[in-house]
Length: 493
Length: 122
Image 1 (cartoon, rainbow over the protein chains, first blue to last red):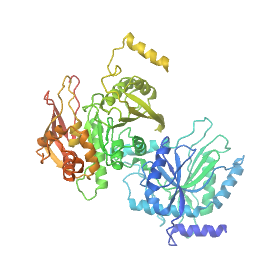
Image 2: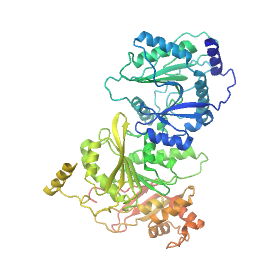
Image 3: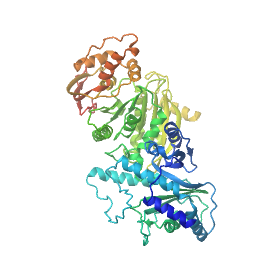
Image 4: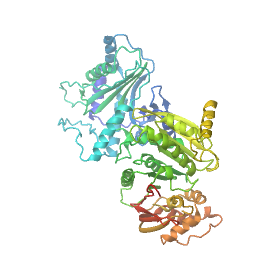
């Protein structure tokens, strides 16, 4: 039975048989920005009408679909990477010696239900081909014609912009996998890269195993698991292992006693979709999208990003919520022109006919501490505030944050307005916020991981208090009265 | 720059109290189609400074018989809503400047982007 199964799989995968479109149910796993698992689940429910389960392993959700809707999954905006679940175990009993664990992997590889997952993987390749390819990143050719020419991967950028792109994608990839904070945790990822001789008549697929492991009771490392499981997979399928030019990426996710084996469906993370001109601190599209969902934009809402950088947030906003109006601004001329270029890129992508269609979006160059806007004209303020580490400095944040929050309170509609603000400098932000008690009220906070830094997305409601009527918004010099007020506030907390 | 944006922008030059609306001096204007949504337009109208919009349309030579005061029951007047949609969202100032009505200070518009930055002591 074992060898028949292998043959059937090999035939199917090489395309010797016509693949039937299964409208079968499959489980898809997706990685999302940590902290936004629930907004991602909301999007899945809304667009696929599927109920998503949030994994205990942070930053992951799972949901069931039928294969005819796989292309829709690619259109979701909350998801970073996708994979199809081969099998998942929620209480895998690991043996206590490395040798035993290795034997277990071998046994496991042979008995996993690979067929359906591989069908999905194959279907997915045809979907990706239809979508077309973006300029950059490693090629993902499912090269089943035996083309072994090793064209070197795209490491030489043709222009400075591309260089930014590669650095950005590297940096983000490394930080994408979030680890639990226990010190014993060991969650490196390891790529299996041995090459083995091939004799079968059918050109073998190339594969690699990526293992993420977290938990303090394992007797092995993710290194060990990737190597051993990879070896077992190789033996079973007679595929060729290749770390960089692989067709199939097998994912082995181990989180304590939860084991999930999957096949990757995305190579390039979906989160860079809108930004073609990067800046040094561009926000992931999936994170921008998650933040926008928190705002719940309504028809005719005026949504302002007063520190838009290269425009990640307003661009994501305008693609999804076309019945709101987005106004983005920045004081940097470079940022502004990058945003403009990113808009043009989107327009080109969505309106190929060359028609001059517009978007409900405008960009202004301005100083956010002194916004050239009418008071109470804005429904939602959403932005990524300078972190102090990569842009600006912590000292400047002490001055900047109170001024920002004041101006935002002035332009935001009393009573109905809201703000969704991302910042890593939580202490500074909260202090500045406490000085504006009359104007803003904290609604809730989502803790996220941005490029390895712990940050918070603060959701604020604008109170009904009209700007200019409370003592907080009058800039008082630091007098005895002032510090007395401070002490009283601290005492009451 | 669309006229919807212009409707919200104001001069913030120090000491100026009558900095709204900014005078539009356009040297290049484009019309870009945008999908019409009646609900969007009818909900946006009450948020606008209507006089400023009429004024802006005039500066661009596109008054297009928009009434100087809002007619009652405008929410159900499709033709009217279409006109407002056009002037708010489809007419874009690509090059030109915005001038503060009180101080005379000019803010350039280039590639559709107004530059509202002030120098240090303005």
